[in-house]
Image: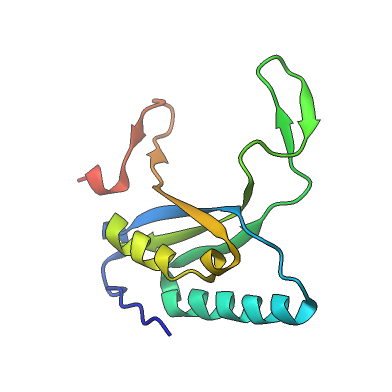
Length: 131
């Protein structure tokens, strides 16, 4: 069992949002394995507490649109879902990702700090760079 410790008492304005992108992963071989994996995933989310902004957004029926406008079913990235989690640093986000049970089914996680687009100016600004 992995125990995660995060400073969840920080002011929300001092916390960044991180997107956890789920890539690949094997489907469990049986309904029992699926249930067991889902329970592990739920426990992982519970361990993150209020840091979880959006717990899981799985994808289905993915299609790709090319630069020339043509479309095709399927994905070119193997992206299967995402979560949004608010934490104090990239180090905390990486520690949370390392404890995610998605890795146990052969999946990969890609973690990025999200930036907020300011209204009208078209410029991006990191939440932590604001006064």
